[in-house]
Length: 402
Ligand SMILES: *Cc1c(COP(=O)(O)O)cnc(C)c1O
Image 1 (cartoon, rainbow, N blue to C red):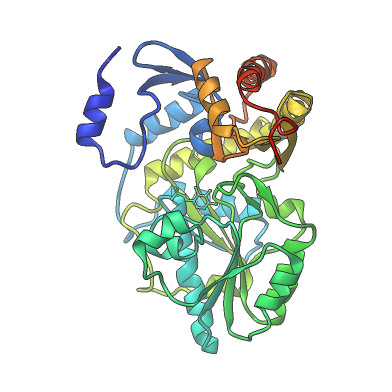
Image 2: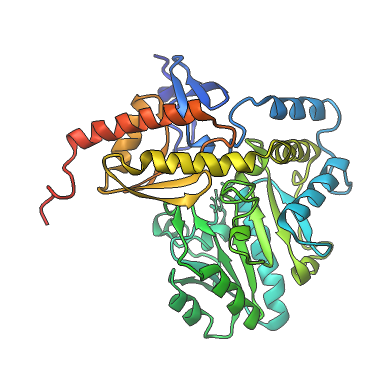
């Protein structure tokens, strides 16, 4: 055993990263410093959509690094223009859409918060609505839009005029009753909350209320976007057109990159001097995203996302401790009949399987879009073994005293 934990405790800020020290990966497998192999079904939290060390990813970085890596936001580059046009096409913005390129999900959301402010200030409105259970990121703006007390409260005061909406159609209608809403932020599926789906009709109602009140509908698709749910964007599953959508996670398949895509009049809100980023839209990140998104498209990987998602859902449905599944495509929440997600995650890790436990009764998986039968079978075997190990040691709900 290497003594990496000692170094981590001594040198790293105490915010995480203690499960193992990973040294290399290939496809859907990663290895730790002691050469233990893990099947990676978390994918760096819905990021590594082509798995690890995919040749398309590797070649895009190598070729672009040898050509042009960084300029500055005084200049355009071919890859940046190609990526912006591609994102407009995939999002279906039409001619009027615009794209801002950033470096992370939280940064894309910061940009969206500023977009909301620019829109609201035209009407003297500042309220931003967020949905109960939302996660929008860790910087002060995005954190202010994240109602979870454990994440936000140590850093109060947050930015003002953020109101949390109950995750129901009634909650939505009530929140719009005061005519002070500049924008509503919604995740089409709440990944961090435990792959929580919105009630039926929630997005459509958010759209109609936002339109009625001249507020922006801003979708945070940092986790659900870039093909994760089997469509390029989760909103395309609902037939709802937002005013803006944010992306990150899978868009760069492991290279840090984020984006804000606007639709219609929201595209005209920013003007020179109001926003920018040193690294955002750099040639290297743009080249990777173009290669990744181009490959997903050319290889029709979204068909695989849908098919493998179905296969995984069916595979876990009858397993012990499993109450059901949520999510879409390859963003899957496995709901448990008891609050044993942490134990299952740990047992899976011992079996060489990486998954995560966003809440105490949900396991989340977000594997690569490239997985095939072999990976699905290996997952089902290892996950089944982890469930069986925990089921053997934990009381089942019926045995638990009321
Ligand atoms: C991960 C995530 C973020 C934050 O993205 P970072 O790249 O970690 O800053 C924001 N919103 C959602 C929905 C996310 O899943």
